[in-house]
Image (cartoon, rainbow, N blue to C red; front, side, top):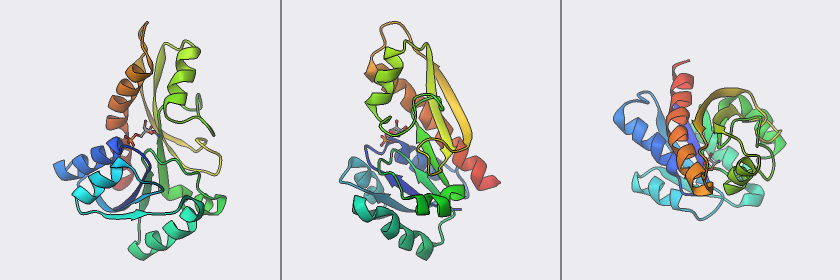
Length: 186
Ligand code: GRF
């Protein structure tokens, strides 16, 4: 299965996918390309592995990305910390082949504006005792598509945003590659 990974940040999740391919856990997955909407550390991780890497303009991302996806016959798009909202046309066309990872237990703490530390801030303010991460299919409604898998962790008294980020990253490292494996074997 050929995958394209879209990134906007540090690329921890991209690295997890790279590692899972290299270890053989994702035995029939090939990372054909990485696409990003900004200058970010994930680019270094991608170039380090000689993966074809595209930096695209946010405003025309959906159209520009599509040419590359079609040319390479991509089977699955993985949004791994990707921050541009894709056009409705794009999500309509690719949604059944596109998954996203979100750092909360959707449907809680999802939607426009709920990304990065804002998610964890809201979770702490609501005094939740459990949080987690979700892998879901992508639809035009932000963070609303069908859930593929979720993982949870406990929030302890005194936990700060950084603690939640660390715990969510650990959960994400498991569930994203699991979801990709599941889809690659379907
Ligand atoms: C992850 O928490 C992901 O759920 C969210 O952005 C973060 C990405 O981090 N959408 P990274 O770029 O994979 O390091």
